[in-house]
Image (cartoon, rainbow, N blue to C red):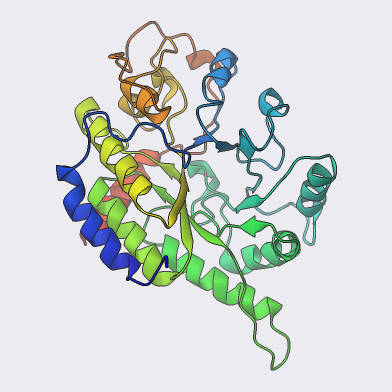
Length: 328
């Protein structure tokens, strides 16, 4: 069974032995890997790089990318996200959108919710208080869960306030779905994790989630080792991918790095594409291929002019906060 042994014990034991068993290129193919899609307007040809090597993707939106809409869900699953709260209270248009997708033949089975609600807009967060978020969840996520779709908890930052935010959210949500003396819990199927610090901090952070939400699987939907040397970034990728693939309760993960080095806001070495759009070693490993020998900064920059505001503005700050929390 998945959790007969304490997940914290498994996490700690696996983290301890991994450095001695990681292969030279890290684990190659894995059906857990997905695409955290952050396109650049001047290099849209790069969008074709990721499928079919990756099995799923999300784009911080409720609707699939036009580029991928004709790929069957069985080959490249789109996972919708309710990024933040709608402008109008009581707005349930997200539910309608998902139901319409399903009616059109798109086999939606998983839902993501609230991108970094504990962070301000200026840092890429959806900036929601737990009480408001709980009501939006009951209005827009619970009906989909009641339909049988699998739903993930909001993806908080890796900072100190993330878990307390989630615990308050779950408590407020449970109060909303309870009636009179009949107490009910706000149900969800998996927890969603973001991390931008070192590997030890990542393992510790996952252990804290395992303790706070036992018997739940994990999706790591944004992660990287922000603003580090190429050697340290590659080492982090190898050990973290090996870690995720060895743990049964890690269902899925998506490296935040599917862009060119010259537009990366998590440091040039964290990108999976070089300045001129070739797969770096990390990019090749992530797609299940052998190392390319291409450095992230190789080639001439052509994409900076079309840079979009990616959700991880100031990711380096979250990484620093997360490391400090893990070591405190």
